[in-house]
Amino acid sequence: MIPKNLQNDFYEGRTNSIVKFVINDSVEVVDGEFKGKKCSVISIQAIEPEVVLMIERGDNGALITVPQASLVSLQV
Image 1: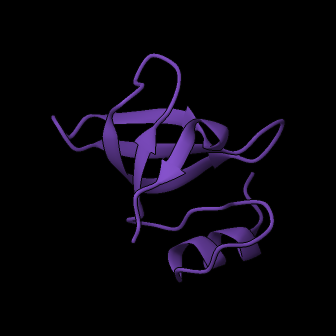
Image 2: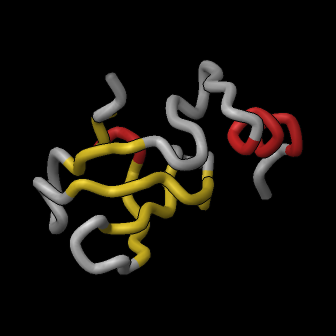
């Protein structure tokens, strides 16, 4: 279960020491099966043993889950 304060931060656009991205952040996958895909962050799926986020692929709209460590921000 995701703690309410982390969910609130995420949906209200505030990063924190655990979750580095917020809803609708533009990101690129930097390793794994979806390497190179540009996506938008949708939700937090897990925080233990590592943060896992659901993201929406920009090329086809598919929803995928990716460890936070495999993402870099495309925000300017």
